[in-house]
Image (cartoon, rainbow, N blue to C red):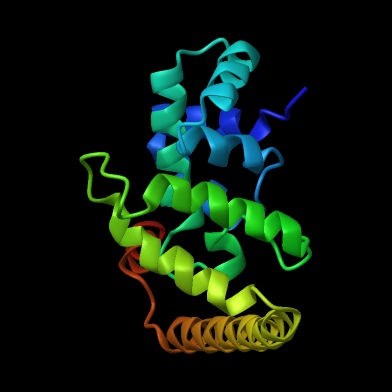
Length: 186
């Protein structure tokens, strides 16, 4: 039986889009292949997903596509994430995910929407990781970027704490404190 975890998360997000940022910051849920197949309008996957979730196919398709657009393709997403994967995902699974995405997005398949513009982003992500050499190089660059971003956040937090400390130590006595002193002649 297929894993519907990602689809269930997608349905929840579709109904409560305010949770997108929280899900975006976390790890990808299991069951992404089924979600990608649903987004690609695969009839067998839609049937399985409908049985697993007890939801109509149209709702599942919309939720899956919303999940992909908001969680996988958010600004700043790395190539692995764009393909619905992580650096530890096998090459065959990366290729499978790319295939599902392209079957939905390909410009030759006119679905009457503008999502085919994302095909370039998926293609570029695939080009970053399609061979072992490119994947190794991209993963190393990604690790350096993650470390650089983490160091930048630590520096910012340290500077912000120092700024708050300076403001607190240099702040004059507050109005309320002066008022209480005068009121009770302390």
